[in-house]
Length: 289
Image (cartoon, rainbow, N blue to C red; front, side, top):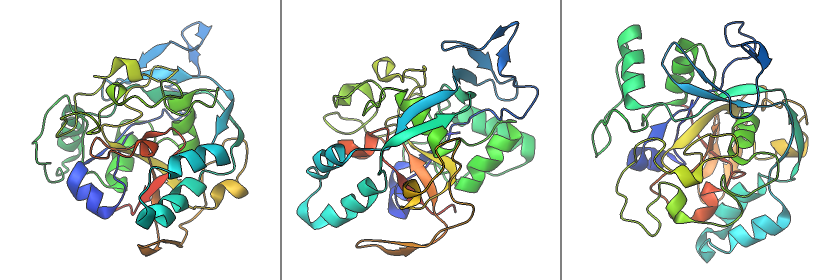
């Protein structure tokens, strides 16, 4: 599922969304696609919510950022926010090869219409509407991490780990953005150099598609991942199928203070103009409620 916001304030301003990865342990979502092994470009439909899922094959990919990439990104931050920006950028070090088993990933963010179906099926209330109102083909917003996890369970899928999310966004060549290494505000939903005042219909930015066919992996809405957030996790994390810390981690963000029980956010939101927030390796977080 996809979803989320950068900080509590951002959640109130920009909206939260979700995206799912299929649970490969479930026999009804097999690694094999018909009589042939699944391959890049294959698409499956999740019968529970009608979502299209694309195949992300197993193997290694480059995860995280280099010192050079971080130094370049940090130049965008105002001097008074440098420490804040450096905290988040440094959490993406070191860059390393990570191996993942193959999995199915939602092609699009979960829409308002799909989330409404979930609410009706589970007798669940929706969160408060964003300023632009509910639009069926826009990503669902303002969901908590638990909302996102519950939706994924209902859809017989799961929230992606941040490693699954990052591979689905950038492929195996270490590209900075889903489309390549050059920033281009025309390839994703953002206020930067545009008049955008809300989320956009899912899948609107065709030229921003990831190597595996995932849409809106940069911009539109932040996306929840399954993992607890730990700014130091990459320093000692497994290099095969990492799933994040086993429990909540306490840490301190410069100019913000202590944070406990935060979950990982990825992908950036339409509201922000700092392009490094849309980089595939950029890690953010928010408390899960």
